[in-house]
Length: 488
Image 1: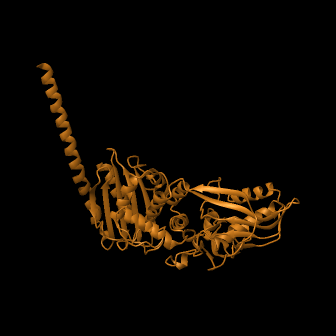
Image 2: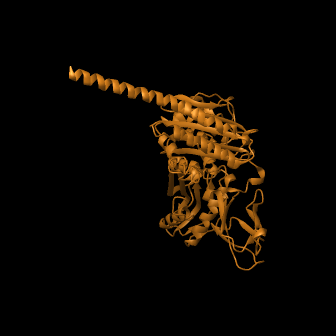
Image 3: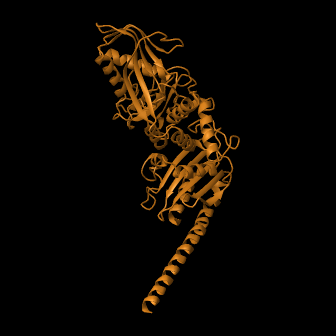
């Protein structure tokens, strides 16, 4: 009888404890709504168009929504869709492969009677990013490989084969007055150094002198006209760096304060395939290899009857590419990915074909063309339109995906890195939010996951358009995320 009473007492305590847990969950849900509603009464949101969707991934249930079916401009949150589609159709182990081939006869005397061809695959990673910042690491390794084949003279050309993609380098709906900026870097089947030139303005001592520049990579492919001068007056510190459309003529003008810290910027390059081919030719010559021909793009009908010798191949993975795309919000990478999807899945390396693949993916998760609008892979175009519900549906789908962890790991983490490194950094919230930021004029977005203390994974999307103060809307986004951590 004593044992039975003890068992009964245990069961009673357990049931009371379990009931408390149920009550706590209900309280959490109510508490969340009570916590969120005051944020939306902020007077700064009076004329702002916004939507919110918050779901429990574990329970497949909605926790909070406001205009979650309405369409909004999404800025770089578009990268969530592009990179998820890449994981769905290509996987993280997909390899970009760039080949350097000799086309012609290599004689015993070390002469290549023919051309060197760089055949691109759309790889965005030909840069110093994975080589300790050494921009020349890959073309230098190629030059060494040519030398190791015994080639001392090349009678033909250095040919850039960028045919995996079309030559529509930038989206017509991108801001025309910003095309020289790094975030408008062109997409191309053969790319180098994010298709940019790195320029650092260095402080000086003598007002009136032309500002000193540190430029990488140094190559003849671009020219710089620098009329920017040092100034003693801090108030006069103002300069501009522009590139003439359709050229690689970079213009720097204005004034640079003598006591400023070094300031680095990046200028996009026109016709990236020739950029890489030029750097490679110069690297060959630096290694003592004579090149009689010129640098040119591949022509239709090239190499019909040529002997081909592979000299070297460089590879990188989709996982590497997705990590950079989302952590650094790299538009160039996203555009390379969407054209890669077109090339690999539809057989056409165009934006149109890439969008078709993304639309197929959207259909798979429950949304049909006409219910949304996609205009690029990165979100720079304001023509992109998605709803908060579409994004949280995507995030919930990817949370259960075999490669979902790759997407999770690629997202900026609160208080740690990417676009969230300076946001939500207090100990309670640091590392709890994994989300993609997004910003273009009058559009701010934040969508991702909350790693809740109760073990749940929450997916959220906060899309805000037509605001005046970016800091205000970002604080509201952060407040919402922090409320999720507090309540769960």
